[in-house]
Length: 468
Image 1: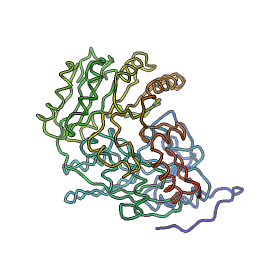
Image 2: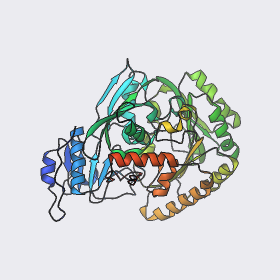
Image 3: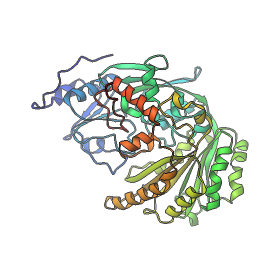
């Protein structure tokens, strides 16, 4: 599908928002509308911008019209799915926000184990619907994240060691390109674009619908072990989690124990290493898989049980509230003694009581995909570390940003790259750390083909390659 080209906007003339809005099937929100103040907000509340227009799209046609309008009017375009962009790229100052959150169509074919999902769905919504059939697609760790943005960056979640990244389940995408075309990309159609969207983020267009493979995931054994946050426990985390059966994926949080009724009151607010996990199998095998952690030290508390797979998202709902935060992240080859000592040092002097260090032990299915098969090329990263410093008072933002930056710089010498989805707005050099040099060059060539004017630049941006 292609839309007729509109004449390029004359900067001396007012932009005709009214005519554009009349052709949109969804909802168009202007600054004077009552819904505007809520509609303009994004999950990361550090970011406070005022777009000229918010388009809540109802269809791929709405998306294409908005893309063409933004391009011809010369307005900055922000594309928003679940609004969880850590860099706050889901909004713009004076431009257009294209909000996909109303596009929630989902068709599941349990016989063929395929799903067709529109871009407005969250990971939790999709997972609950697939779970009704005893099936799942590996997404991230949080239910309220939009599936499109999560997938385009890679998708590292609760099934990463058994079934790989979200992009490893991606079969095809329906995408609106910068010229307003709606095209399909897969291994056989626009294969260059399909390679690029599997890890290259939103640089190449607006994905309106995705086709995913589904895997048999019904009841799982999951939850959390709350461990003493000692050097011995941290040193053992990598070797135990990496050598565990691939049915076990872990995401650990060095943090203050939450005030949950399931955790003894005397532990609330005290430091702990919460080893959260999903074991895709029966409870007996799951207990055996996590037993090595218990052999290192007696857990302070346990919250482990059989549950339907979507239940793991329920355990993290309280942590999904919007708010300001400082964040840095990196891949490491291993969690060595030097890294452990640095983590313990900074945990002891953190600037916010809500600060946490997230540690993901990777490997398994994720690492068996050739590095060049997708734009996500850090396939052999052994560990991902994310430094998160949530806070409440925006006046204290410089304090928490400085702490997080110092923590990051202390760990950075051992870094082997970074996950694009876990970057803030950190500059072009950091974007290039998300992609090895050859991968980045190839992405820049695809960018030149599909978005030569860099319309889609509110993202971890890859500039179009220069003409040869």
